[in-house]
Amino acid sequence: MVAHVHGPTAGPRYAVLFPGQGVQRPGMGEPWRGTPSWELVDAVSRASGFDVAELLLSAGQETLSRTDHAQISVFTVSLMAWSEFRRREPDTRVAAVAGHSLGEYSALVAAGALPVADAAWLVGERGRAMAAASARRPGAMAAVMGGELADVTALVDAARANGAELWVANHNSVRQTVVAGSREAVADTSARASEAGLRCSVLPVTAACHTPFMKPAGADLRRALDATEFAEGTIPLVANVDARPHRGGPHWRDLCARQLVSRVRWADTLGVLHEELGCTDFLDMGPGATLSGLTRRTLRGVTSHRFELPVPQAA
Image (cartoon, rainbow, N blue to C red):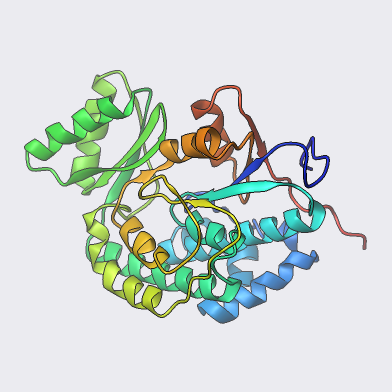
């Protein structure tokens, strides 16, 4: 339960954060069965063409590791959490929202810029396009921890100077940056990072997200975006590609298209939410605790919560 909420004109100003691919796990839909939010599973399944109930209840880790399966699964659980949160805490002041990569589509729903069905269709099309692109050109990603962005950028620049296909994909916090590119380049840079005293963890993915490796997915995603209407929305959403607050509207077609091949500026996003938009408390909305951890490491002294699982239902 969210703490310290006293009504619509008092208490904290919340930033609600929606996670991206990577937080999925088998059985993560089980706690939501029997809750009012479970009806979203059928809605997302119809719109996206995936059997979301199967993915959330029965699929194993190998199935969930597929890009398209992971994305629609995380999207659905995040929206169930958001629905439960608004049902339980209708007076909580949400001052702004943001989503990490895939999570930006959940945030667009929360901001009132997209209805659930349209967002679910876009997530399905995006996931399929990215899965096809990574099948044609497999890649890798690695989280480099312990150094600042400049340190990791220097490693990437050195690799690129030697002909490696490598880019900074995510700047997640002051001490965590994700690199992506070819498998060989990521493995070599991971070794060089360790030699430089940095901790490095290769991520369990086969795609080089937020790099030019995803360009083949761009045409399919763009067609889907061009067929989608974006409403004006009700609250600001800080975008991944420029770390600036935006309302809804048709310019999100360009922002979402650019996001596919651009760096996720997450550390900057957190700073804008806190310093520019006045968010005092941050709420990680969805599976896992990745974003609440990144918030605590980036914004010292700022309160960061996870939204709890649904209240158990009576038999």
